[in-house]
Image 1 (spheres, rainbow, N blue to C red):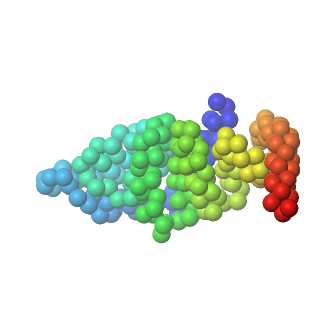
Image 2 (tube, rainbow, N blue to C red):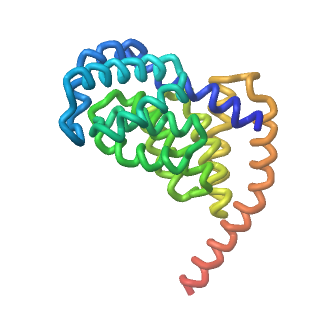
Length: 232
C-alpha cells in the first residue's frame, strides 16, 4: 500500500543516521576474520580470503541499501561460518526488506539480545524491523514489546511510526484505551515533526480517534460499574 511504502522509505534511513554508522562498515572489513569465527570444515587460506572479500562486498551492498544483493552473499557465508550477532542482524534486516518476515524474525530474535552494547539508535532499527516483521505476520502481541523497545532507543522524531503501529496492534486486540492513547501519541508526533507530510494518515488517525472515543468511554463506564459493585 502507499502507507506501507512510505513507512519503509522513511524508516529504512534509521540505521544510517546513527553517529558514525554510515562509515563504520568500512572499518568492519578489517576485522572480517574476527567475524568469520568458525568454519564447518578446515578451509584453504585462499578460500578464506575470497570469503573475506565477499563479506566486504556484502557490507558495501548493505550500506548502499542493496539488500537483495547483500542477502545473497550473507546467505552463502552463513551456511559456512558462524557469523557474529551484528551480521546476523544484517541478515535479518535483509530478509525484512525482501518481505521474508519469518526468516527476519528467526535471525533478529537471535541477534538483538547480543547487541546490548551497540549504539542505541542502531538497535532501535533492529527492533523496528523485528516489530514490523511480527506485524506483517499478524503476530500483534509479539510486535508490541518490540515497538516499545524501539521507542526507548530511537530519536523522538521517529516515534510517530511506532505509535501508529502500536495503535493498530492494540486495536486488533480490542484494547481500546491503549489503541486510543497510541493513535493520539502518533498524531502529536506527526504534527510536531512531519507537519503537512502525512495529511491522509492524519485524517485516518483522526477518524480512528473519533471511533474509539465511544468504545473507551463505554469501557470506562463498565469498569466504574464493576468497581462500584465490588465496593458494595
